[in-house]
Image (cartoon, rainbow over all chains, first blue to last red; front, side):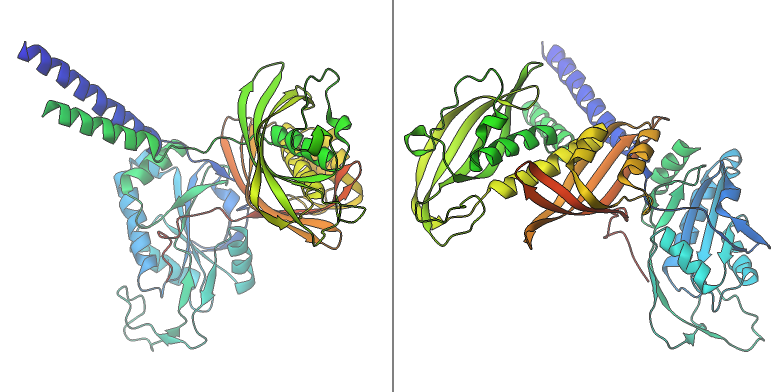
Length: 212
Length: 286
């Protein structure tokens, strides 16, 4: 008799856990909706040379971040986070994903400089930079806020990722406050949502794969 | 012990299934428009216009001697009781202020200084499929223990009815209803292209082939302004596109409406996309 009760109890327990599991996974597996009123095509100078348009990445899922190489914390952390995600994906998925780093510091960052910076994380990442007006237009399209923190330039020597030739004269750059969103775009360049440095890799992977 | 475990599991289940997924009941803007229009017409002394051809009992119990006259119905809640193909039954909670004889000749719009004794009124309305009133039965009619300043409600009820009708018609893409709500020479700016006329914007919406279009009104405010009413709010718009993907948008809207005997008309409509709401706690900036 006790075994029968135990059996029923275990069955009820299993059903409850199954139900909880399905509810939790159902929430996180929801597809990313299309966010209207944000985004659009643009062209900027590429770290790989020449000029690229967003529409050049048709049929690829794009993860796009607005930052600058002098950023001491959130930019390298975010790039490392995306790099970690990319390393966990199979090569056929990686080929269908493009990471774009749009520099908001057109005073300091150059395509060559961006290429060196991004190669620390993943050589496939592309950096984009251009005249201030063009960067502002792109930032406005994506409603990506950024502001210069002060008009005074500061030393860049504190940077953990030193990009400058140790023998070259030290340069100074501005500090910026900027959004920490990773914009996720589908193959039709429509914004489908955002990731952050704190977004779990598994969740990012699941969402990205749902768009591939 | 087993009982405790089972109770714990059930409580967990309750938390998981209720907290993140609990959704507020969906507001039926078409129904709200009909109810607001009914009370606006009562407050303007034109209830006959909103009565169904085969109306039953409309008791008017809130009025002295059950004889409808000028007054102000301030709606507090509209609760759906039942819905069928034939029509809808709702219970409406209002604060009713009967016009004092001391008020001026135009009590529907004039805000007098007179203190009146309000009434808490609950009525059950039966509406036909066109939103016309078949019956109105008063369930509660209690006089307040205090007096309050008389506040006209007719125009505000008209304006709210127009807003809800506009919203419902945008979702249903009812061009006739939408264009009928626009005043002649109304200023219109849609969220897509500022140069689009209302008809062009509607044609664009039709071309999207959306299904399940649903606009929810958030952060609504209504301010009287030089004989007009300024509405400011946000549409949280979801729809399914022809590929089966869900689309989301936040649209900030400003409307100016003017109340006329034929109903409120939109004299200005400005809509623009707003940035998506993101988790501010997670949005670190450096």
